[in-house]
Length: 367
Image (cartoon, rainbow, N blue to C red; front, side):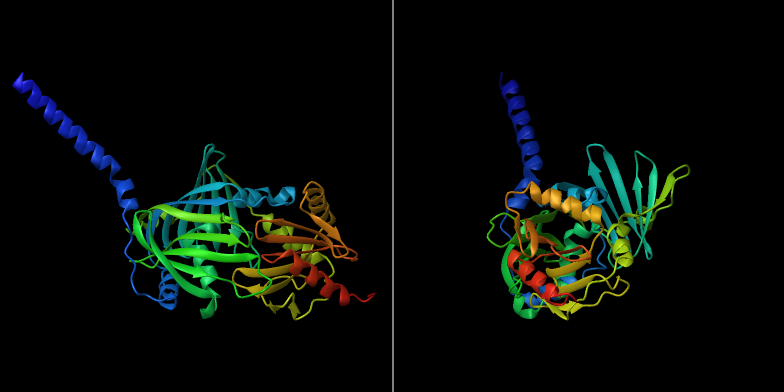
């Protein structure tokens, strides 16, 4: 009996140890994160300098934007409205691999110096996308480091402040907040968590004005600072795979190149115009960082899709400037009464869209 009790105690101890080991990841994630005295400027510098830090990991992006887009851009709508799970191997900005994992399979994006390869494993289809100034967002663009560095690169010092430390992917992450200074901005704030050791941004959350839940939340759930091998991020199209050239870029850019431009001012809704080398002159881009406004002449089919989306949206506003609707912090205005159909869109308020439409109308030859 004594031996049996001893065996029972030993097995109980083994089970307890296994239970503790199994719980370790959750326990580590729950430990308080120690902050340090780094300033917002120092943390920004660390994040911007981390582009060449190599790592691998698993990231999740969750969006709540019901985008009213044309059929050609369904993948873009899915990217910003659903959960996207991504395996990441990062050797540098021009040498990385991101696999999007879904219930139906995996799609890998391999980045190189000239653009990227996208391989749909199950369909054995390969697509080549060349670098372009107005390329549509892809899953790698929503990785926390990529998104954070883009926003921080144009942030003014007065827009940045420190917030508390946290644990992300089991690592100590220091908080940095970006609060847009532009009055026209529809974004209330962007909260970022930066790895205390490497400077790699581990989480980004974008909050629209007047909302408690983020419109976009992208974060790592696992991160390994071990450099991945070059073989992992190098892509060679497999034998027998069908090959395509990405045509989604042309949906708006090529159409804008073929349509007559509308007169565009140097500022719009209080935002300065910016230049983007290689973009069509018919497209006007204004603002910086998280607050950006674009004026785009669109084909009749895209305009028709937007009107259809607005017709089914009870919050859409139709008045003299045109039809305005929102998807989280993204505002969209289909301009009324112009010979060339234009759309004004960006991370600005509906009031800013109306002001922009009025300024454009004043420039029309027949006004």
